Length: 134
Length: 291
Ligand SMILES: Nc1ncnc2c1ncn2[C@@H]1O[C@H](COP(=O)(O)OP(=O)(O)OP(=O)(O)O)[C@@H](O)[C@H]1O
Ligand SMILES: [Mg+2]
Image (cartoon, rainbow over all chains, first blue to last red; front, side):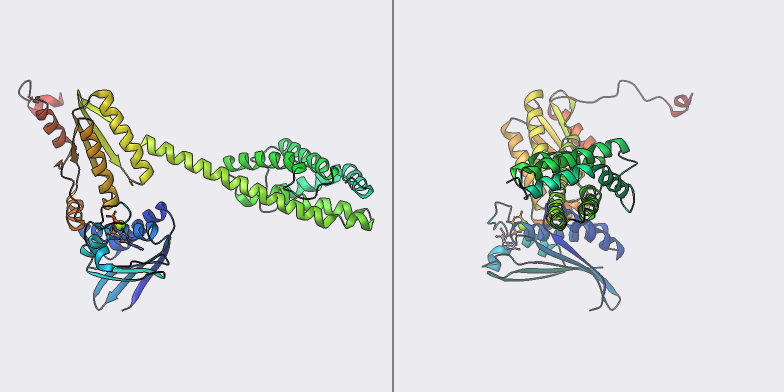
C-alpha cells in the first residue's frame, strides 16, 4: 500500500499526546475526512497515544497518509517497548483497566476505526495500528 | 595548597586583566551571538570583571574543581547571570558563550608569559571554564522550565473561569485541551464556587473542547459526581454532534442532562429553579428599531 506521507512523533509527555492529536487532525483534513470521521480518528489517536505514554512508558506514533487505488486513508501506528499486555482479550473488554481509567480506550479506539490491529508481547512491548478510510 | 606557581598564576591574571577583559568583551560582541544590544556594555563589563575576580579568588585557594566549595561564589554569580539571560530570552548557546569566550584570552595570557609552568596551567583552567559553562546551561534550562511551568499554571487558572449566571446558577465554559493539571484546577474552582454561591445548578459547557476522549470524560464524570455531593446538579452543554457520536462509540455515558447550547441549558436551569423568562412587552417592529 503506497504511503504518501509519514510523520514520526515521540510520545514522552502529555504535550506530545496533544501534538499527536493535532497531526492526525491535519492529515485527516488533508485527505478530506468528514468532520465526524476526523473526530473519530483523532479521538482514537488520543486514546492510543495516552496508553503508550501511561502504560508503555512512552514510545512513538507514526502517522501515515496511505493510498489504496483511489481510496485515501490515515494509518496510525503506536509503538512502545513497555511491559506488554498479558491478556489482550481482557484489555480490549470494556471497563477493564489496570490504571484507574474508564477502561474504554482500547475497545473505543477499535470501534472508532475501520481497521484495528494490536500486537503485544510481555516484556517486549506493544504495537497498535489503526486506519480510517475516506 | 597555595603554591608558588599559584601565586605566579594569580599575579599574571591580575596583571593581564585589562587585556583579558578587552579581548573577552570583543569576542562577546562579535561573532554569531553578540551579547550587546540586549545587555549594556557597562553591565557586561561589570559581569566579566566580577567573574575574573571570583575566578582568581577560587584559584587562589588552590581549588581546581568547579564543583568545589571555593567556586561557590563564582557558580552563584554565573547562576544569576544565566537566570536573567533565560528571562531576557537569550538562547542557551548565547548564555554559555559568555563564559566560554573567556577561555582564549586567559589561555593566551598564560602562554604569553613564555613560562612553561604557567602555560601548563592553561589546560586545567580551560577545562574548569568548560565545567562552569555546563553549570550555566543547567541553571539556564532550569529557569526556562520554571518560566514555562509558571506560564502553564497561569493559563490553567486564567482559562477556567466560573461565572455566575443567576442566583444559584453557575456556568463553567471549558475551552481548549483538558490535560490533567488544568482539569484539577477546573474542578477545584467549580466546587469552591458551588460552595461560595450556594449554587443549585452548575452548567459545564464543552463547546470549546476539541476532543472528548476517555480521560476528559472521566474528569467530567468526577466533577459531576463531586458537584452532586456538594448539593449541585450539573447540566452539560455544547456537546457537538460529532462529539456525541464519538462518545457513543467510545462507550462513554455521562448520565447527566445535556443540552445543545449554553442558552438551552440556562433556560432549563431557570425552569428548574422555579423561574421563567417572559417578555415584558411585545417586541418593537423592526422599522422603529432603526431610528
Ligand atoms: N501500550 C500498553 N502497554 C501496556 N498495557 C497497556 C497498553 N495499552 C493498554 N494497556 C492495558 O490495557 C488496559 C485497558 O486499556 P484501555 O485504554 O482500554 O483502558 P484505560 O487506559 O485503563 O482507561 P481509559 O478508558 O482511560 O483509556 C489498561 O488499563 C492497561 O492495563
Ligand atoms: Mg486508555
